[in-house]
Length: 114
Image 1 (cartoon, rainbow, N blue to C red):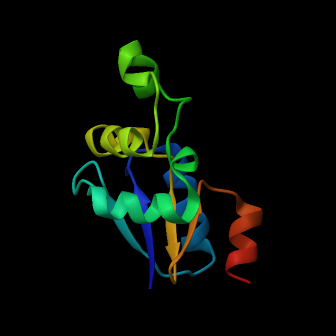
Image 2: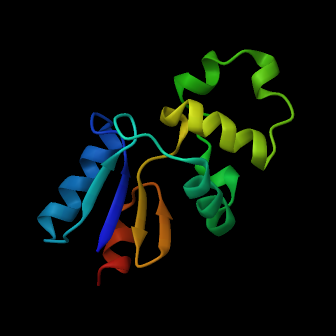
């Protein structure tokens, strides 16, 4: 089974879900705005793709943080921030048989599901 993690109202999530639906790829969607995401899962994701790949510094949530929260970010601090502010996790996070794909690209999805 394929697991997709994200926020239901996110435009990128909508594009990724549409692509998967159009290509008849079954998946289970996890909305971490409703369900949350725990530090253990984030640690596992960081071990696979690195915290830098997961932390979205382009979004409004990051930009609205106080400067001291953004200073000296390392993996532990990033995980804490991502647990508290799930909207800072880049979307979607797709778990395909244990392999993570962060972000949406139609070309990359076509490769994954060829």
